[in-house]
Image (cartoon, protein in one colour):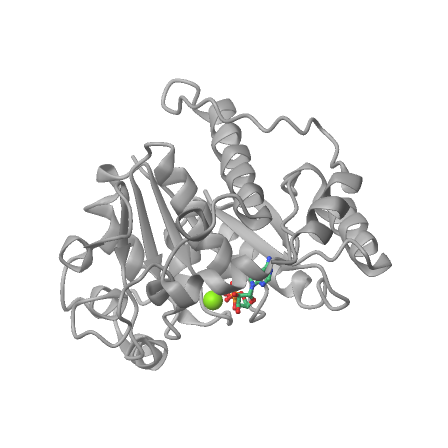
Length: 287
Ligand SMILES: Nc1ncnc2c1ncn2[C@@H]1O[C@H](COP(=O)(O)OP(=O)(O)O)[C@@H](O)[C@H]1O
Ligand SMILES: [Mg+2]
């Protein structure tokens, strides 16, 4: 039974899509069968894996509206083991159209029920809001990954996100948990980044991924080429960091389901982040 993980933060530009694409790619690269669902009308995950976001084909909108089954909306991604349910600007309408539909919060859950057994992991890239699209993702998900940008307002709105997750957990989806927090776009030359990291770790404790993603020009270029970072520049710092995060993610699954997940990608950084390493990495990534 595939585990469903939503990349969620109602703030825009924090690294949801970048994290969803690249964690999906590295987990698929580890021979896990992955489905990436683009649940954002902006369709950045769709174009970020090389699919035309204007193409007329079934996608997340059609699945939510019951116009097609989830399996009918699946298309092949840019690598073996990576499949995608693409988005389209039409998904904007879903936020409003869903309001009047029966079991409006459960539509994604129901649609995925038929196919989740075919995948090891299903990752959902959420839009920057806490509306019905995100709610459908949270109700369908087993866990949430929260990407956070290392900037001054990183923690702003976080309590609202956490209380939404708790609310869903208490009512619509009792199995929902927080998988982890990914700190992104870190600039280790600034004191602010260090302060944000400290504060986030105090709040989320061991739920924060040890590996921190620095600002990386290559990471911001890759979507323009429709490629996950591992296909665009696998030796860049962003690639190395997302590979480690995917390794941490898979490693964390081992303790939950030792018989199902077998993977040898343990993070060798140890329990504490080597910030000095990250500083060097961050500064060397100037290409
Ligand atoms: N680590 C990073 N370094 C540099 N740019 C990044 C990084 N992560 C994301 N970006 C860029 O920042 C912008 C916002 O990231 P994105 O993943 O789209 O955020 P969200 O999905 O939360 O809106 C995009 O242009 C993306 O390419
Ligand atoms: Mg996005």
